[in-house]
Amino acid sequence: MSVPVRRRRQAQDELLAYVDRIADDSPDAAIRFIEAFERLCANLSRHPEMAPTHQSDEPALRKLQLRRVPVPEFTDYVVFYAFDGDSVDVLHVLHARLDLERRLFRR
Image (cartoon, rainbow, N blue to C red; front, side, top):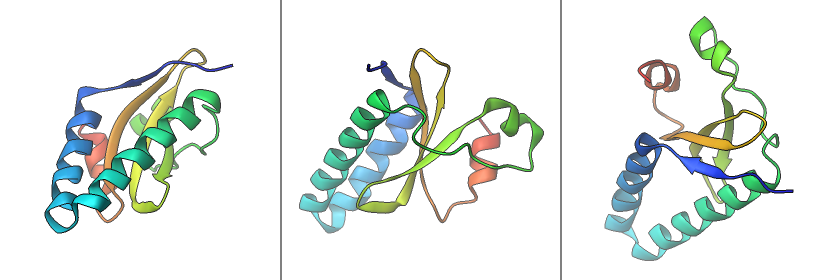
């Protein structure tokens, strides 16, 4: 069984910004990044609970029950998503070196 995967505008904007940065150095790598992200979304559709819940000290973030999974082959990039039992909602695509808690809390 598969569930729909929706991408929030913020996640799509973040994804495209990283694609642009990667493409500056290597257009081929940018294409591989997009393909890896698309494969990840397909896997999330089939296995929405595959990633663990993101552990946070921030109560508001804990309440959201966000899940965190790296983009395959590009593990410096992390996808944050929520699963409500019916669909996957991709909320953010962030570089792992960022202050993730701060970026997520601005949500």
